[in-house]
Length: 504
Image 1: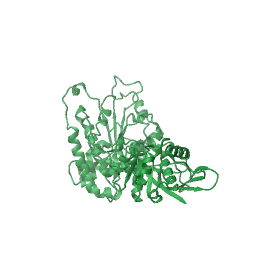
Image 2: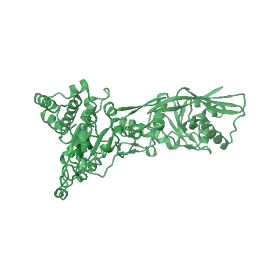
Image 3: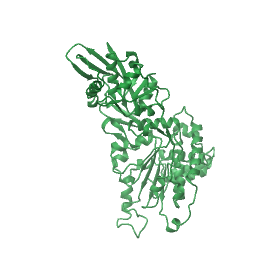
Image 4: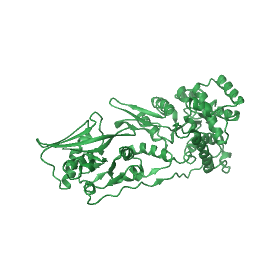
């Protein structure tokens, strides 16, 4: 008889169903695992053997074969321990075979039979729900997996608990979802003295998820502005929270099974490698751009990043997803993020201050910002200079709206966009609009069209730049509660696009 249980193999955020088959046949005593397992999966037989021994379960002196089907799909990770043990328990008739066949299991076994938490419980629960199966996982992963309401999740502490549950001796109650972590920030926009134009650009970028580039001297407030973005962004919607948490689940970033409603804010160091930013490395893990999905990726000292790293951002920015190609697999991750970049105007940072600039002015500015290619710079919707703040401004009381007020306007603008695009189109924000959709939602009046045509001809806007101006203008109109895009909206959008100091 062949006993069966099920588990998953991860390909990006997709969890593919894997059938774990166990056969006990006559022959020399052996315990083999086949089906393209990696080293961690092959070592499962020793962990399972020790866990069984701790429970006083003796393996028969026969040939035990575990097959992981489909056999051509690579199997990686220690989470195969529990499904292998479950299939073996069914083959030994210790647990009912039909119960094992109705279960998707994942978890690592300790030598004493206790279950160790593993990554990816949330995507595994999605697959279990699709197959109408029960998900069996370590107790520490139960709160995370239970967020998929369509799946029954059983969180066990030990392999003995699993046996007692399936034999009816001590049923384990279904796991409950962890707590929702609500957004909180003690950093307020009013803490930033001056920089009213930059605050306005920040609001527009947050409302439409537009990419923003700030160029300014050291200490002008670029990083301070970026640190206040989380305070003006609305919480994740339930669907966005699930999407983002699935990526974070693969990296073990969910705290105690809780789903965070706070939008991700990732700020990698400029020495980060290409695999760290885009994804890849061992097991093709998601990078920073995917961990920032539905949130913000802040790249300070932007020109200091390796040229190859910066160029790999171009395609993900356009498509909203990244494909990591390997010899044996292609892994796709979502990455719809708002890119915020900050840079000094030159290597010394004081290009506009003759008293403090280096001897290479103005060539040092061209060389420094020249590290950012034209096609990449063209993908920034808003580009502006952040001037230094004078000592007089530092002594003035806080000015402008606080983060709560700005956040309310941003949330209202995003609500308008959600109603405009609906759920069927796959679009959520103005940054996603393209082609016919953009033409329909950003219909210009005669004056606005004439202004945009003159600016395109005079400044040589690319087709991409033309459309990005339209998207930003649509967002500005949404912030003002205007149904139509008019000339003032186009003029303001162009003012951020054509900043003389950073125009591509």
